[in-house]
Length: 147
Image 1 (tube, rainbow, N blue to C red):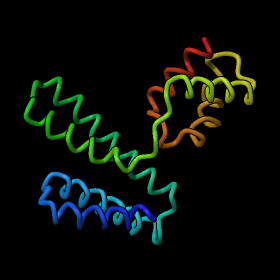
Image 2 (image 1 turned 180 degrees about the vertical axis):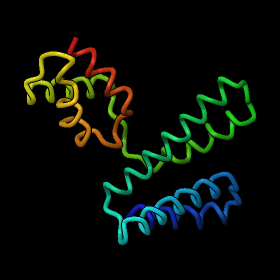
Image 3 (image 1 turned 90 degrees about the vertical axis):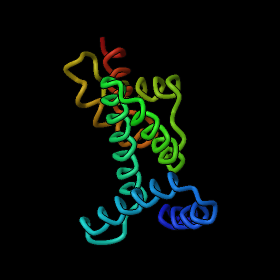
């Protein structure tokens, strides 16, 4: 089942169950996917769908961070709930240990030895972990391994 089909099914279920918050998030996700489809001029690949979902998660995490800094608890709760609904559609996230193993492997593949080689490592690594790990965590682990 494609992501769009899954969203449509979940949207119908949310309507039946009268889950307004979930319905709103699903509609936002569908709109984001449809906008990306129009922008690219055709069907979205799984990778493109994953990129859209990752962008939506990142936007909500950024908003959450800003709202927490501003002590806007009303908005913090709302964004946390949205984030929970969006993450349902994301692939299973890698643990830090699994990610560290993949980082070590990528460093060995590229022959990187210092922080100057970080770009090469990140270029080799990101396609492998796209959507399965937070980019800032990947960046931090690569820096730790290269220093």
